[in-house]
Length: 147
Ligand code: DQA
Image (cartoon, rainbow, N blue to C red; front, side, top):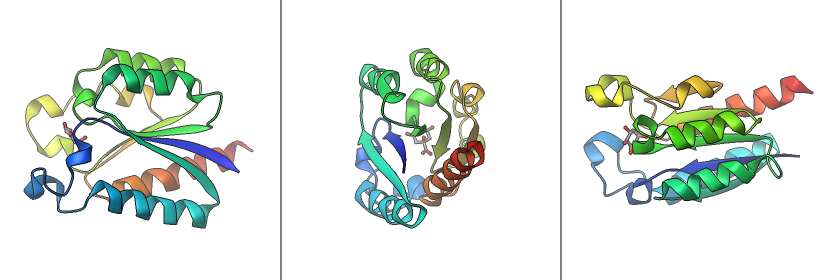
């Protein structure tokens, strides 16, 4: 069974109450429950983590290859700033997929640059909670195609 690490970055613990006009009313608990359901259908084991701390995310990615075959990450604000997370993904030697709830290209200009996208297999942006489900589907396909 494939094991995938899913990381929610900073402030995503506030989903539901945080800028609902941008991110909708869906909570992180609801997203995680939907992801677990989909993982069950796809026969994938998911580990889901939320962190507001850049170094903690770097540590998680750094250790990931021992336990996981892929990483799905919503780096949130770190998407646009973190060379450290980018380098961790680049060094991880397992595929990563970047996801965003909002369409970052339809928002402020500073969000149009992702430091993570060039070291990811692909980016999914703008489909709300479904971005995560699409990310999981894409990661499953990548891993099954390898075998
Ligand atoms: C986000 C987009 C980022 O620009 C922002 O900083 C977030 C959430 C998204 O999922 O749409 O915190 O990653």
